[in-house]
Amino acid sequence: MALETPNHTQTVAGWAAYNSSGKIAPYIFKRRENGVNDVTIEVMYCGICHTDLHHAKDDWGITMYPVVPGHEITGVITNVGSNVKNFKVGDRVGVGCLAASCLECEFCKNSQENYCDQIQFTYNGIFWDGSITYGGYSKMLVADHRYVVHVPDNLPMDAAAPLLCAGITVFSPMKDSQLLESPGKKVGIVGLGGLGHVAVKMAKAFGHHVTVISTSPSKEKEAKQRLGADGFIISTNAEQMQRGKRTLDVILDTVSAKHSLGPILELLKVNGTLVVVGAPDRPIDLPSFPLIFGKRAVKGSMTGGMKETQEMMDVCGKHNITCDIELIKPDKINEALDRLARNDVRYRFVIDIAGRSKL
Image (cartoon, rainbow, N blue to C red; front, side):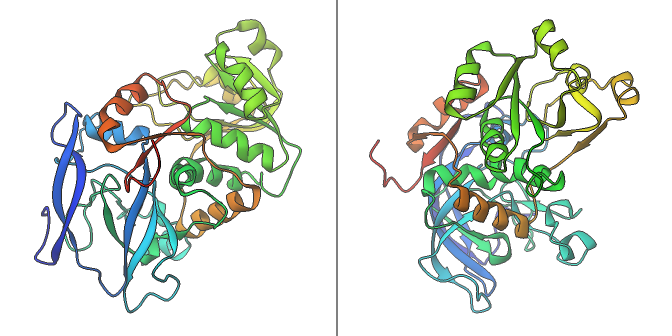
């Protein structure tokens, strides 16, 4: 493991956390030369994910400092390796969570690279050459083309950036639950944040009845009028939770704070499925009775493979689905992270890395 190798010759300006204070500061580092399988990308925009906050503060005890966060990246290709046939200079592209995988296991061969046990992430990972990966809080990125997707021409690059993590994170379990081809289901979305608001848009676009489950009564108007949700349940209101029992076919739980799954499970019909996509830093409570008495299932889901990520981008292009964002300059990253920690964002911060937008 090394910060860089002799092949890292390209000097790049970026922004990094240097210690567990989580404070982001300018950082000059080097990226590898563009290899035969690589594309070089001028980064235009990068979304701020809750994972960035966890890594910056080393909440999970795995951060390798200095860490350059960012895995919701959109930009334009400026260089293409000789083996790359599906991208060209000038293409609008996106890079999400994945930087490398083994390419040989059953999951890699089945377009589920995200479940490869040798997966390496876009930042805070170890690339094939042994170097530490740095993310999208930077002016330029070199990526293996197998982990890059096209961004549809009709999607704005800033509002499309969070789709590379938040979008695929909720799209994958929806596809897995056959929600793309079977309209008319009753779908619940727990939490109306960066993941939840995209999930509502997608579920509505796929023709489902959508209920938002939230601890915040103030979000009801926005959920229904702005995002198109059909129902809203305040999870701390016992009467509303009682009325909602056994009404939903599928629930996506996007909440990243510790909570109990018991009351949420009661909202599912018999044989219903709860998919956990949020990542609390402490174990969540899972009582057995709601599982047993409702023949219910609880499963997890993590982002998606590259084929599925491209499909998600194309579907979002077809339905004109983007994220609701607050665009910031790089000098406001720390302020944005502080606000994200307080859930004070509607619904995703995106950094204007290239400085092309009028802010």
